[in-house]
Length: 194
Image 1 (cartoon, rainbow, N blue to C red):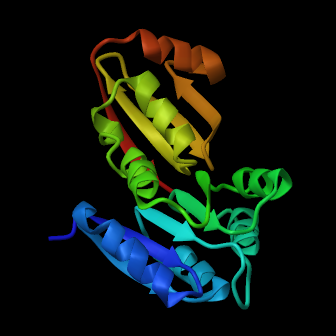
Image 2 (cartoon, rainbow, N blue to C red; image 1 turned 180 degrees about the horizontal axis):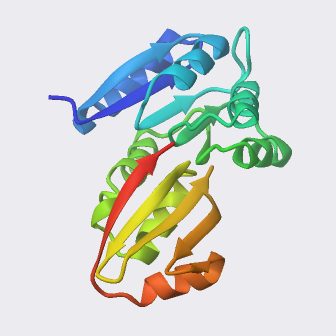
């Protein structure tokens, strides 16, 4: 039984096999794309829990995939870039365009498992405290709304690519609404993806 889904975007079939074998214990439904454009279309059209993506690929680079998705305002899952290409400028470009992490090839399988576990095994946001849920929204670079139900009313905190863009609760907005919501002990969090 598959619990989560993984998209692998890399032009090397051996890499796909390595990742699939390494992450077997996570019970992931794996879909493979072998060029950047195919990966871009897949991320744009379908929902995944995580994507592993190379930088140097035919048709579109990994950086171009990220640029296009963010430029179009498309919500996409956490993306771990795994590439032999290096340089602080490239890494910061990937992170600024929505990548959750950047790993250098060849990646140690134990390290890959650890990074994937960190992203996937984070307890469901809806079962977290509000500060932890907010942290997870930022860390995952999520585009979604946190709908917070309380005895006093409903609050809304909106994220776009992991950045808090709007919050409202009981007539308060912005940080004032967030601070007020954080003071409430009994609340229920739902995530509404956009």
